[in-house]
Length: 134
Image 1 (tube, one colour):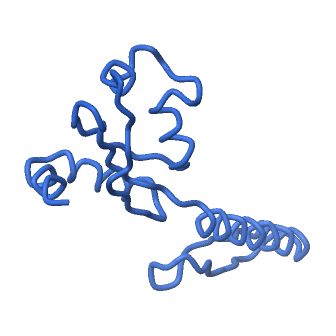
Image 2 (tube, one colour):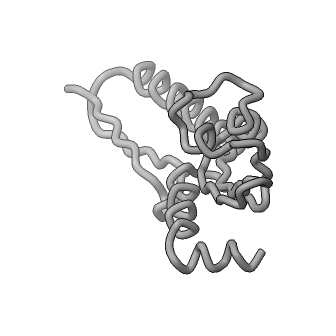
């Protein structure tokens, strides 16, 4: 008989639960469990260490506003100000004129989907009204 190991979560969280059914030897299930534990630990630390940012930039010369999201805020601002290599066709490159892009607002998130959601909120009418009030 084969042993089938089914992994799920307890209470919808990220803690794995283990149910074993009849089957292969004990060593196969222990190796699988050990790999799962290592994988869960790795995912936990990656999520803990990674931060995603939603940010708002304003051009000091033209007063135009740019809203975006990134994983490395400092590098992204340097790229907008052409301190790092950038595309010549980008919005911030075309609208740089003589002004510099200044950070006027930022938020930090643990997941990219939350940062993208907040970026879309800031790009809406209400979001732009919020930014004007800063």
